[in-house]
Amino acid sequence: MTKDVIALTPRMPDPLTVLAGLLAGGPDKLVGTTGEGAVVQLCDDQGRPLVSIEAPLLVQVAGEAERLLGATAPPVPFWWTEARATTGVEEAELLAGTFAARIATLAGGSAWPPEAARSLAVVKTDGVSVAPTPAAAQPAVDALTDKVAVIIQDRPVIAMTAWLSDAFRAAANAELGLQIVTSPGATLSPAVRNSLSGWPSRWVVQDEKDGYYDGLSGAVLRWQHGMFATVESPDATPEDPRTPVAAAYQEVTDTGDRQLAISFRTVHPADDRLVLGGALESVWQELTGRPPAGWGTAEPANLPWSLRRLTDVAFERAPEPTWLVVVGSPDRPGLATVRISRTKAGVEEDVTLAFGYGPGEEPPLDALPRVAEVLATRHHLQSMLVQLRKARRDLAVPPRFEGPGVPLAFVLGAEEVREMPGDRARRTPLSEPPVQLGPRSRPALYYPLPGDPSDLSGWQDFERLMRHLKGA
Image (cartoon, rainbow, N blue to C red; front, side, top):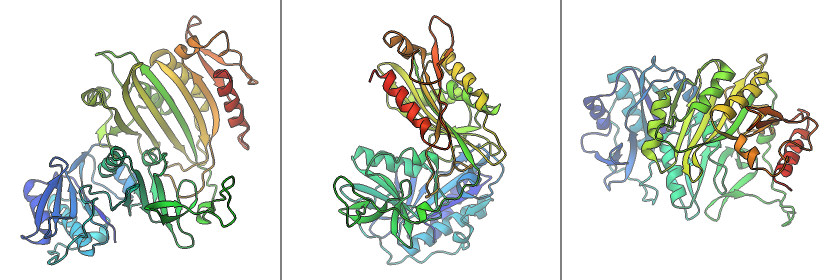
């Protein structure tokens, strides 16, 4: 049975509706709050949480319930009310289901998953208690050691929800890794994959044959020394660890889907008149003919696209960095993560963006030089890398091998070209010379990478270029 239950309703659950949901455990169930009042908890007799309920979220972006849940939501705008049950307590899972069922009944709409929210009856929880755990203060965390925080998720797409975002932040502040445990049928949102890059954080996939494996590398895992860690082969040596790779990870099928992946950084002079997000909007417009559909500080992306509102959020949080997720319309899958930070150089925007294409759909590769020129001449581009990958059109990350992308182009911003000694930036070891972007007096440079898509020569060209630009 799932541990997360979500009510999707056309009307905002009013206080009486929420109260009816909270009474799912009877009138004597203890109620507490956390997260500065944003999370309500139904607790056992000792005050430990059985169910944690996030404040209702107004979603104004079409397609988010379908993308993240595979569920049909009411027309936008609609309300997303999420409840998370404490892992391993059956009564807590029933309690979360009844809460969501009552919200959906009184406010209209539906609950996800449907099988978890079929009863409106009071759940008998007398005598039920939760094992004490140091993770109890963090609703998303199921286990905590001196090395990692462990989260167990049972959703079709593991998204960067407000729960998970808070858990990442808490783990980072405590200098811990974050390990997410899922069933083999789950996928990751790119927003979560991009946040799992630092060891010992990892995606742990349950597997019938191998027990557990890393969903991003395929390495077989075991719980040892307070965390999930790789298993060494019996004949391993320090020089050659020979970590076994799960058989399920190697089951690859080429569907013909591809992704155009673009990562870039812009550095703007700090100015009270600065408007953020314009660089990403320009790329989206050039490649799809329309701006992004929506954005948010977590998934689901709940706000319609707005440069001014995005800028206001970033400035309100400064000097702390701001992390954002940006999505496209359902007919052209696109997702970006943006990190905005204040540095000595100015205001930096680090963007990782991908668009998905199915068989018969051609990525607009001929638009790439124009994209680079727009970024270089209008948005203070520092650098950009473009890749084409064999990966799912819907952008979800499966626990299967997905080969490396083929690098198509690298772009160096005008300021970085100017700072290089001599003509190093213009004279490279590549077969094709760079293309000048912008004014001759202060150009940016676009480096085509004519590698063979069938092998790694594109990466070899890219590495040669990087060594050359660094003076190595």
